[in-house]
Amino acid sequence: MKRHVKMSLDFLLLALVVTPFLIDTAPRDTTQTKISVWGSAGQYAIVDRGCSGEILREEAIGYSELGGEWSRTGKNSEVEILVHGVRDQIELQKDVLDSNYGYRTVYEYPRRIFLGLNPFIEWKSRYVGLGAGLFWSSKLPAKIGSRLFPTFHLRFGNLQKFYFEGSFFQHPQLYSGNYLRIGIGSNQPATVHPWFGVGFGPQDKLGLLFRSDILVNEKLRLNWLIRIGSNEGIAEPALGIRFDYVR
Image 1 (tube, rainbow, N blue to C red):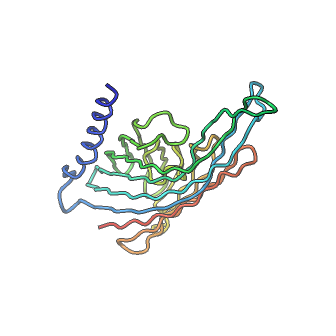
Image 2: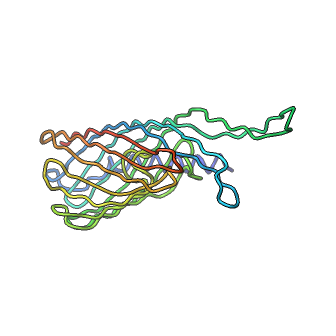
C-alpha cells in the first residue's frame, strides 16, 4: 500500500514538473524566460529544553546549498520550477551502554544530501501577486515532518515604489532564505532592487534578511542574500549568491 501511495505521489510530482513546459501562458511577444543558478551556506542551531525551559543541549548545524530555477513569465502569469540541492547534517540518537552510568543517549550528526523540487504557478500584476505550488523532497528537510506539502507566495503594493511580500518555501535558497519569510522591497533604484525582511526555518528564531538584485546588463542579474540571527548564543548566519539570465 505504501509503495502504491509513493508511486502516485511521484507521478503527481512528475506531472506538475512537466506541465509548465507545455503551457503557453502568454503571446510570444510578451513571454520572458529566466534561468537562474545559486549557491549559499550557513548554519542553524538545535536547542533542547527541559520541562522548565532550561537548556539541556545545543548544537550548531552547518549546511550548504546549490540550486537552479527555470521560469516563464507572460503578461500576467508565471510558471516556475525551483530545484534545491542541500547538504546538511541529520540528528541521530543512540542508546549506548556505559559501564559506569548504564544506558545513556548519544547524539551523532552525519552529513547527508537531498534534492528538493518546487513547481508553482503565479498570477501577477503591478500591484498584486498570488502564487501556489507543491514542494517535494527526496528526504525530510530539517525540522519538517513531511516530504510533500503546498507552498505559497503573496505580494501586494506598487512594484515601482514599495511592496510587501511573504512566502512559504516558494523562493530560492531554501535554508538560507528561510522556510517562511516576509519583508518589503522596491524596484527603485532600477539597478539595485533592495529587499529587507525577517524569516525563520530551519532556524527556530526570527532572523534579519537582506537581499538585492544588481542589474549587470539587460540579460544578466546578480542577486546577493545575507541572513543575520542567533539562537541561545549560537550564530545563525547565511550568505548566498544567485545569477539570473533573462531572455
